[in-house]
Every structure is written in C-alpha cells, then in structure tokens.
Length: 348
Image (cartoon, rainbow, N blue to C red; front, top):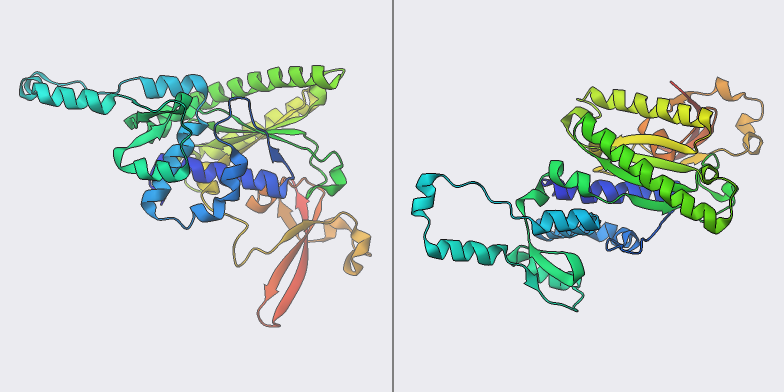
C-alpha cells in the first residue's frame, strides 16, 4: 500500500494532521486557493486504510496534485518529461508513434466540471490526474519521485480556535498557528524549504496582526512542523535525523530568547506512516493538570516518579514539555483490568 512516494506523502500528512487536531486541539485552516480540503480527507481517513491497492494509489496521486502549490502544479503538469532518444531509436520511431505520444501528453479538458471521487476512480485507467481550473492532465513520471515534488508542496496551515488553553489536551501548548512542511532529502533542500516557510509565516502574521490590531506580529506564536524525507533521515538507520532534531531544538531555543515567536520540531516520514498511539502496549496518555486530584500523588514529588524523555515518540506527538506529569493507562492481563502509571517528562 505504501510503495510509491505519493502514498507516503498522503499517509504521513494525514497522520500529522490527525495528531495536530486530536492531540493538540488545532483545526485546519483553508486557503483561498485551497483544493486539498484537509477536513474532508481527515473525515475519511479510516476508509482510506480499507480500500484496495489500486484505489489507494489513485487517491494518493489525487492528494499529491491537490497539495501542490499553484506555481508548482503548473510547472510540473505543463512540462513535458521525455527521455532523450538516441540516433538508433529515432530511426525506428515511426510517424504513428509520434502521434500517439502527442495524444498521450495532451491535456484532457472538461471546463466547468467539478470531478467527484467516483469519477476520479473511473478515470484511473486513463492515468489522469486533477489539475488547474477543473482540467485533467496526464500523469507525469515526476509525480512519482519525492525529490521532484517536495519542493513544490504548499505548506499546510492549522489554527488554534480555542482561546482557553486549559481546555486543550496539553495546556502547555502556547502557539496559535502550526505549519506542516515537507522537506527534501538533502540538507540544502531542508534549508530552502525552511526559509520559504518562515517567509510565508512572516507575511501571514503581518496580515493577521493588522486585522486583529496587535502591537507586533510576534505576538502570534507559530510552530513549524517539518517532515523530513530520505534514508538519511530514518529514525533508526539515519544519523542525520538526530542532527536535524538537535538543530531544530537549538533554533527554537534561540527564537525563544529573541522573542521571535516561532518554534520548530521535526519528524521523519517513516515515523508517520503508521499510528504510533494505536498499539497494544500503548494506552491512553493524559496530562496531569493537578497532582492533588490523585491520591497516590498527594505526597509524591514529580521528580520521584519514573521518567519519560522528551524525545520519546509519545511525548513528541503530544508536544509534552519537561516538568509535566502524564498519566498512562495500561491493560493488566494478569488482573484482568486497567492500571494507571505516572511519568515525569525530562529533557534528556
């Protein structure tokens, strides 16, 4: 099911969207030129996992094309990607073959028609994908390579609509916006994508500050969530992912000292291909807001509890901060019930 890079993009994006919405209390923000509509994709996330491989591949390609920005979509889908022919192959090519190639590259236009999911499935045999202005273009080979389409993806924006932080799953979350960004397979691509995202965030904050009549745009705090691709950013095999996490941690600390209002975190695409919270050994995790409400913690100091590191995947998904105490429910098969455990979050 996850053979193509388009499938990895869809699965990792929707999984991170689910984490931001369910575990951090955020809501997808629609753009004026938004064709993706993340809320609708999140609503059918469970059904996506149940479809057959052919339909899953079609949905992944549709998700990819709709996630591209306007300029990137035009650049990718309007460009012809043909392999250079040798002299011997040119002699063998006939006029009929050239005409068939031209027909294959020609766009399929049906103006004024909004294609539904059923029509997209029916068009799977023709290898068509959705493009600009309700036009369908033939699928290019470039859409199957992450190194080509990652730099053209539009960042996904999320907003914190609940002003009362005490109602959030994690009351320590202090940012109002979150931006989901897919970065390339190399350090140079990561820096370019990060610079592009920061520039976009600054423009959006200036517009929002004028509308809300804020003294400074930095009052709107933003969290940039980066999804790193490539084998060098593998959570187990790759060494560069650790360096990238350390870099993001240092950037967040520096921004906090300067009062920039932007923080950073990074996930590997391999970490988001499955739901890490849905496991037989992982129970519900809840942030303890008041230790006195639990009898076993009334005479216990937080540092006396067992530790959980901030770098743990469960802590990273929930954005737990050092100094917090969490309650974990576990199934006790020997007693046939549920036991509760408490963990103290530490930095390292």
